Amino acid sequence: MKIKSTVIEKYMELCPKSSAKCNSFSEIEDKIIRAIHMGKRTILDAKSYRVNYYHNCFIVKSMKVVDMYKDVENQYHVAEHLKREYDAEVLKVVI
Image 1 (spheres, rainbow, N blue to C red):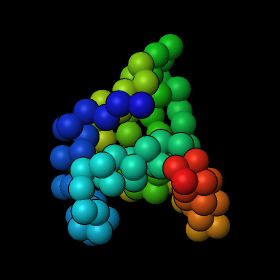
Image 2 (image 1 turned 30 degrees about the horizontal axis):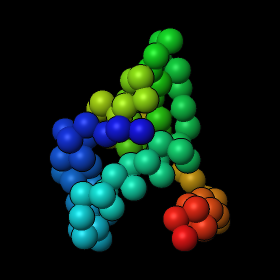
Image 3 (image 1 turned 90 degrees about the vertical axis):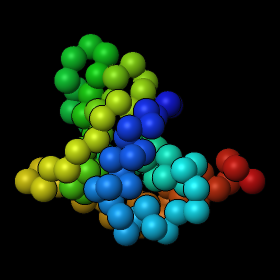
């Protein structure tokens, strides 16, 4: 999945604490991809959908993350154990 550079910039602006923990843009991309995989999807049209992950919303169009914004009214909470399971599965694939 591709991520527009403007989305990475918005992530750094909207999520400064999370971004500060990252040592590179690729780590921020990994966080965005995890949010896309674990968040709640809402179909917008045939080629695009919105993903809610906590207060962050990502717009995915044709397998590319094209926008990001905050939506505090429609938060989607992901349990910590699910995030740990996802991370363990991704680490297995990487190793």
